[in-house]
Amino acid sequence: MKHLCVWLLLFSIGIMQAHAQKILTLNKNGPVKRIRYQEKEQISFKLKGEKIVHTGWIGSLTDSTFLLNDLMPVRVSDITMVIDYEKGRGFRFLHKLALAAGIMYYGIGTANRIIFREEPVFEKRFVITSAALIAGSFAFKPFTVRKYRINKYRYLKVLDVTIE
Image (cartoon, rainbow, N blue to C red):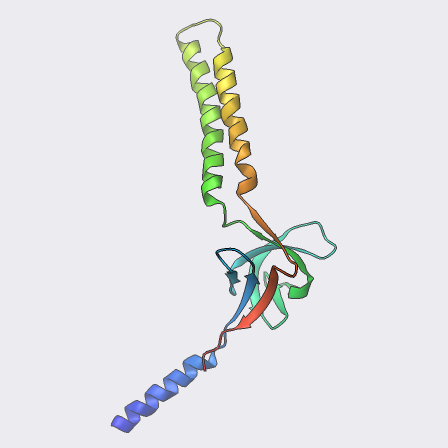
């Protein structure tokens, strides 16, 4: 009975190791040295000679290519820029918050003056304050997305993470 348990354990470990996993990595300088993209994860990038941004889900991943949305084969060496939308979540939140605050401040201030029949309805201080909030919200916009140009310091690589 012990031998059977040992053989079943070894067989099950062998089956688990037979599943190879490949990971597309963006190696770079900085405190976070590597960004990992696995199959079924979203990626955005630009290709050589193109100005449009391709966004989609990584399909099957081989040593030098992957399928985007299981339709478009993409060679890793053809990618010139990787765009990371996950980086600036805090700045994205501040951008939306300041934009909404500027619009709501102007709307509530104007509506309050209409309700109480005060003149002038569009007061200068509401316009200036809401314009400052809206302009401040657009100051956060460049920090919401991180773009990584592929060069000798930042490069893409496919790693085979099979434990044997």
